[in-house]
Structure formats: structure tokens, C-alpha cells
Image (tube, rainbow, N blue to C red; front, side):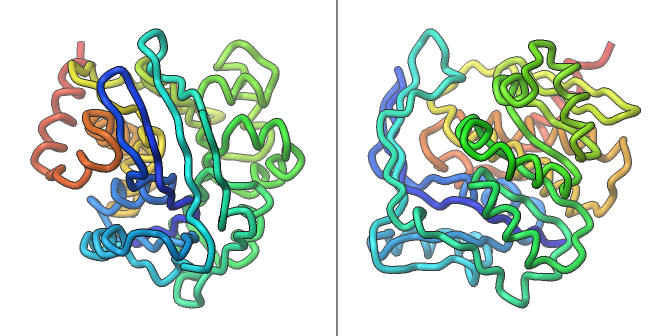
Length: 300
């Protein structure tokens, strides 16, 4: 089964205690697509400007990502500049955001994409997420991400999105902000009451939680010795998670747990280098080995 992702394609400038990159390939849809593409075919909907490097377009196409839904229009590509510091490598400090072509972006889902069964609504305006849902026919699984900005500025639209999706993905801070609930278990239960069948709460280096009305699953993060750039870890997690599910086309609890570990595994590789560099070289053999290592350290 293929996956449709709607999100950002960006040029990122990132500085961490371990180095920096300038205008590197980034964006939520990019990280998600490269992670999910390891398992199955991905169709990407997004927008870039006339200045977007053609080498990045060719790279994505060479990886087998369907770019028929990627609009390239006059103007400048969305840019993000951020920094991470030693005291909290999980939290990005945004130094500059240039929306550029993203400011007027209205997702257009090509007719050949509209019957895709697995959907990921990446971190974009919830009003745009709703617009995408209106263009789809009968998806089997819809997963959506969000962020603190939308919780603060577009909460009503976000609540409408939550009514219409199957799985919500948030980090721990976003879950607390949305629900005004400090306890993550209670926060997840409140989010479930808003519509989704499952809630996944990412906790950075402390792993993740997946909660439904009848099930609870906690997964650790992989214990890394090397971490260069946390950018894109959450979207890579989502790509590994949904990519595994689409490849196996099963949505029972057992497969969901395995998908969480796949997402955890992919994300652990992403942070080992800047931008998407590690995803460029990642092999299925490396993924399998680390997946089994996580399985081993969680058994008792």
C-alpha cells in the first residue's frame, strides 16, 4: 500500500553543539517521505519556490518518491533556521522562519492520489489539513501531526481535524498544552475523547507512548552514543511508523507496536547526522539490526 503525505519541503539552516548546515534539505514531508519510502511507495504533496535546488528534486525522485503533487511556483522556498543547545537537545530554538511560498499554499491532491488509503497530515495549518481531508475518497488510516503554534493559534480547526482522524501524533509538551493536563496518560485520554482512535505521544530521548481506549504501550528510545542533529526525528518516526503499517496492511495491536519500534528505529538513525544525510545511506539491514537490538533491551 502507498502513502500520501501532505506537508512542508524546506531549506533548513541548523546549528547544534556538533556542527551546522546552511540551507540543507528539510521539511516535515521530506523527512517523513524518506523514512516511509524505505518500506513502501510515497506520494508527496507540498510546495517549493523557483529557487529550490534541482539536485534535491532529482534526489527525491531517485529515491522513488512520487512528486506529481509537489508544486513549484514563483517565489522563495520555505526556510527555517534553528539551534539546539547542550542543556536540551530535544528542544529546537527557532531563530528565523520564512514562510515564503508556504504562506499562500493550498494543497491540491492530484486525482490519482485521492484514493490513497494511508494518509499522513504532517505539521501544517489544521485548516489545510481539513482541506486535504475533503479531497480524499475513503482512506483506511489517517494519521495527523501538529505543533504548539497551531494549538495556540488554530485550536478550533485542530479540534475539527481530531474528530476526523484515526491517530494523533504529538510530543509531550504539545499534549499538555492542548489538554491543560500535566499527566501524559490523562492528557492522552482527553485527546482520545476528541475523536482519534489512538494517540501517540513522543517524548524525545525518553521514548514514546501509544494509547487507545483499551490499550497502553510504552516504547523506549534507542540508547544513542552519537547525536548530531535532532531535526526531523519526529517526522522520521512517523514515516517509519506509517511506512511499516502500509507495507504490511494490518492495523491490529501487534502490528501497531511493531510499527512504533520501526518508527523509533528510523528516528534514531536520522539524528546521527545533519539534515537527511543519514537517511540517504540507511539500509534495511541496519534497520533490522537496530530493531532487534531494541527488542532485546526491552525483554525481561
